[in-house]
Image (tube, rainbow, N blue to C red; front, side, top):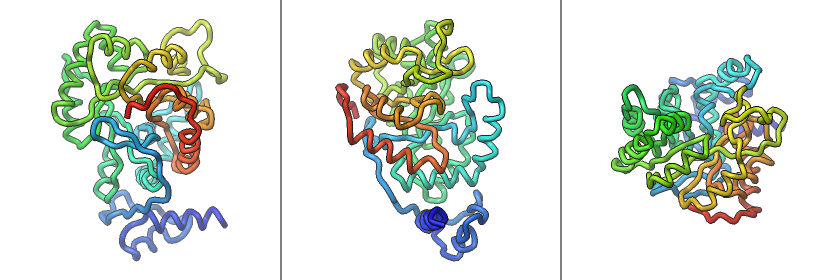
Length: 320
């Protein structure tokens, strides 16, 4: 009963402006969620706050929402059904609800690929939501930067080169394409970044003077059951089971990088509890943490992040 009352209280805070619509759509526990095609405005009453930091002129919450909420992609190792389960659970209505919950708890940004359907996020904005979008863009075809321009046109607060794309560019010896993408975004007054799983991308960008506004780099320990084995050497693991094979090297190098750092895959796709993952990331230099969260995880994750930020043991200065 306590949980039911708690959810009803949230619903009142984050529901539609019309009391009549609220009563019909969400007044009873277990009733159908608000229609994704509703046109009324969502009024989100803050229930919590997350410490903020700046990247360029934009202010972002230290804890950000991962894009797998929208794209339904799951790094499930050999559990083939998990991706479909995510998509079945995260319906359009559920995604809208999760965005509202995240905003109510002080999370103000989500990172998502330009290739994902951003229809739900646009509906969130149309209904009055303020969630900021960090777009992951890729180079297309014959080195086209059309995805970066599309992201800007969509209203992204920040645009970054997606990790796999930047790594492919580096393999081709065409790091100048990263520079061109960064400059395209920055010239239009939008925050520009570079993401990577491989530390070599960040190293080469620094050596080449690419000068993005921020980096997004994976960071997690290898202390979990499905972590890299001695015979695995690629950045994501042979079975999609690791995203930061050299955490100590990453921490050491990023200590000297004077750019905001968004750490992602900090929970190794759910293999590490946020109680360990968040302090590890913040204490070892990350300025922001990107975390995949279901609706029922948001409140707890926000509290974990706040405790981590309130008990810091970091030596890297804040670059935001």
